[in-house]
Structure formats: structure tokens, C-alpha cells
Image 1 (cartoon, rainbow, N blue to C red):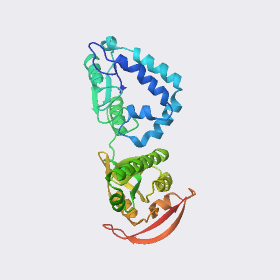
Image 2: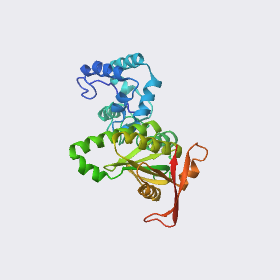
Image 3: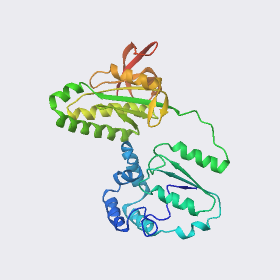
Length: 314
């Protein structure tokens, strides 16, 4: 089984894909200068996942020293296994993502044509198997090894959703003008993404002046919301945030479902600088050290029954 692989990483006559030989050393020097902050690996492995910068920083620091990275990178630039591809004598599964910036998918197609009894599965996404739809990779491997794949519930996942938005954003935009407001939004987006990376959140989408993110641990989601509200105060704007935990339906890169609507309604109740959570979140984080103030029961638009909400405190 090969994932995100290649017969050679540099281009040459007869193999026009990959990095040019002249690109390799400058690329490695760039990697050496920034190694440990995650920016180099994230830019190649998962450019569509800016919220995972913290993950890739740990990946770099735990995986290799800058010197070891240079040695491995130079070794990779020397590898060329094109001539031995026809000698592979076992069934071969090649899994590759179409937007892979490290190993262009043409290399996977090249190998599939030359390895006897090889099958190529093309998936969407970036190089890193730990971002995007990792389940699709595991399903293909499982079926290749066992002859069948598990039947999974269609795209449902239990998660804590976080909604944030800037309070009175329209008034701020009118007072500041387009250029200054655009610069402030850029700073806001950077700060939010830094906190998502710090607390292991996954950015689902931005909504102009707000974010929708999801977490697999509700306590980290609440801590992230509190830290984000505090960090954005430095920009001179107030953020509000709301959280709820429940089952969400994945729809491509987006999520939907009652849990998502509930999180949005809870966020809409929050005041400037406030982080509100549903009772579900409060109950799930018992023993975490977080404290909450009861904000009473509310009727949430479009939802039945009343929902009790709480203001989070670190």
C-alpha cells in the first residue's frame, strides 16, 4: 500500500512532475530556517488547513532536528525507483489525494501504469493523511486488506461547535472605512486561528466577521473561546461566543444539524466579551476547573423547548 508516494521527487526528462532539481536546496534551506514553527510543513502538507499550524509545529519538533530534516530531504532528492516498478510482484494499492503539493498525483498515475496489478484510488484533499477525510483513506486500506469495509453512519460525528462573531461589526466597518476594517479583520482571523491551533480546534468556515469551529473535547472548546475573546480585545473590538455539544452531520467541508443550529442560537444570546454555553456543554466539562454563571432558560429560535445557558469563566 502506497499513500502520497512518488517514484522520484524531482522532475527530469521523461518525468516532468515534482520539484525541479534547482528548487530542492533553496527549499530545504527555507525549511531549516523555520523548522519547528510548523509553517513549512503546513504550507506543503495541508495549505487548506491553517488552523492546524500548531499541530505541524509539534510534528516538526517531535519528528526531526533541523539537521536530520536536511539529511532526509537531500536523500529524498536522490531517490529514483522508476526502473524497478515493473518488478513489484504483489497486488498494490496506491492512494493519492488530488491536491497533493508534495507529490503531484501524476506520479501516482505513473506508478499505477507500471506496477503490475496496481490499483489507484484518487481522493480529494492535501498531502497530510491526518487532515481532511482521513476515514476515506482507512476505508480503502481496510477493504484492500480484508476484502470489505465497515458500514459507517453517514457522516455523523459528536462534536462541540463554537460560534464567534464581532459585536457591532457593521458600526465598526462604517466608522473605520474599508481599508482599516479589512486590516482589522485580517488580524482578527489570525488571532482566532492561532487559538484554534493552540486548543486543537478545527476551522469549519468563516462568516465575514465570525468563525464556526468544531472540537472533539468540550473543555478545550470552552478554553479556546475564552482565550479568543481575551486575545481579540487587543484589537479594540469585542467578540461574543457560543458553544453546544451534539451530533453534527458532515456535508463536504461544512457541518449541519440541530447541534449546529443550537450553537448558533446560544452565541446570538451572548453579550460583548461573553462566552455562553448550553447546559449540555456545562455538564460534559464537570471537573475541568471551569466555572459557570447561570443565565437562565431561553427559547431559541427554531428549536422546541427552553434551553438553559451559562456564562463560562476560566
